[in-house]
Length: 235
Ligand code: JBQ
Image 1 (cartoon, rainbow, N blue to C red):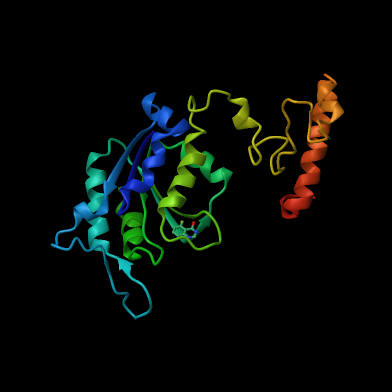
Image 2: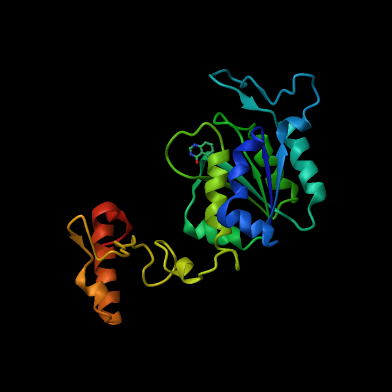
């Protein structure tokens, strides 16, 4: 997978060097390029935003500058990419969307500040046919200062689903929210050695070696936890 990220804060994406995503890059499974939006400005002050038409607080990011940056990225594209736009006014991101994004071979993220990007940018690339899809996505109902952290969240959830990125494929299929029997169940409690700590003992059943009983216990615990914390997920 190829990923282009356009931002006024390139350093926000330093964590992509680390851990799973860093290893995936070294292994050639993902190739990431970060682009500084300001390098596509043409004025001396490298201006990327302007006052909103109609008035109101904050600033709106310029369609002209974003258009230059996106067109430059498109010129380098070998296949039609998907445009991903983190925005508080998009669909709320979930595992199903991560699975869909992981199936594409080129993603372009445009990361705006909270007040957002001139709406004509999304409109233009929806109609230009240069992207196979334009996906506006929010990571949740709270206020962020910009799209960068949302892009990191989306990328982490997506990249770990690419074949080869995770060593242990079971940890993908066992996740809360992963498709299957345990879909829409939160994961129950987990333990490792020692068997007793601070007077707290690991549940007997996990030491029993009875795999059917362990599976049933885990499912019961997952149900309990789901009812407690996320009753809207299911009965
Ligand atoms: C959203 F995706 C974005 C981008 C910018 C601000 C945001 N605020 C809240 N939730 O995920 C978001």
